[in-house]
Amino acid sequence: MDCLFCKIIAGEIPSTKVYEDEQVYAFRDINPMAPVHVLIIPKLHLASANEITPENAAVVAHIFQVIPQIAAAEGLTGGYRVITNCGPDACQSVRHLHFHLLGGCQMSEKMV
Ligand code: DGP
Image (tube, rainbow, N blue to C red; front, side, top):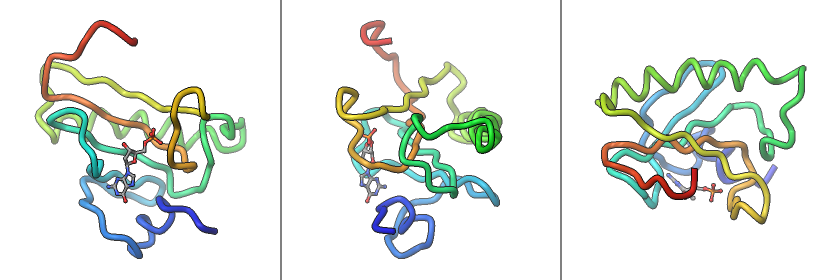
């Protein structure tokens, strides 16, 4: 499968890892939009939030258990924002489900 994030998980494309377990990989975004900008992805290839089903939803729940651990490790004591872009209207550019973890600054009230 020609998927950029599957290649990052496989180590075929380098990334700066911040967390990994059997189900999840997390790494720094190449184009950070905040002082801390981490992408958290399931190792299972799901193209977007549209592919979450009752059968695979446990990995998403697991990601949301891992996010506070990563946020704490990154020193995000003031809070953080989690975003997933789904489809062209949301400007999703990589078709592998990913959650942006953003923090380390005061974010705007505009747009969520
Ligand atoms: P989205 O627009 O929601 O699909 O976000 C995709 C993100 O992936 C975007 O913020 C930039 C990041 N990205 C794209 N290619 C690479 C890469 O090769 N390495 C890393 N670390 N991040 C990447």
